Length: 137
Image 1 (cartoon, rainbow, N blue to C red):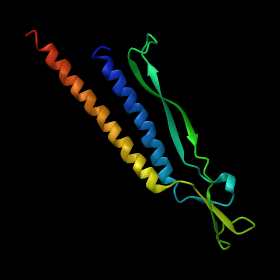
Image 2 (image 1 turned 30 degrees about the vertical axis):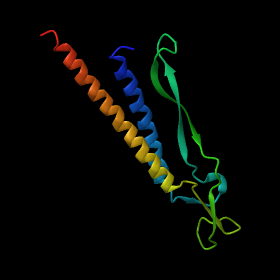
Image 3 (image 1 turned 90 degrees about the vertical axis):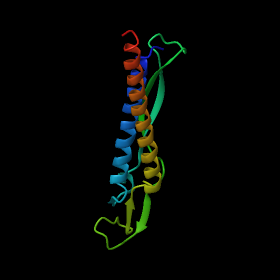
Image 4 (image 1 turned 45 degrees about the vertical axis):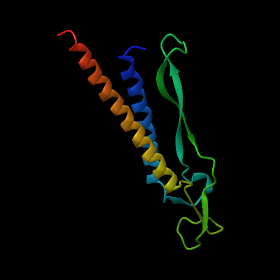
């Protein structure tokens, strides 16, 4: 793996964490949404990542990470008995999202730190390349 491949790996990590942060923000934005039908309730979404091999297809070096799919949580939405609510179903229930704000905030902190580490990796690599170029002067 050459020094320049580090930028490709780090940038793929930045893209992956950007997807993760956007999904977390979307989940947090919908934490308090309510609907009158269980099937229409918002379900939290999370990315699934996979490693990408280098261009030669060998295991000698990792080429980065990619988002392979986005999955919805299978957890049931929260049902609350609230017969006076305008969105209540015929039984008097409203359904809220299955998003846990604590889990989402934890995920957001983790994604933010991973993003920051990839930026620091690119910065350190840039400095290394700059120092290497000045060796011949």
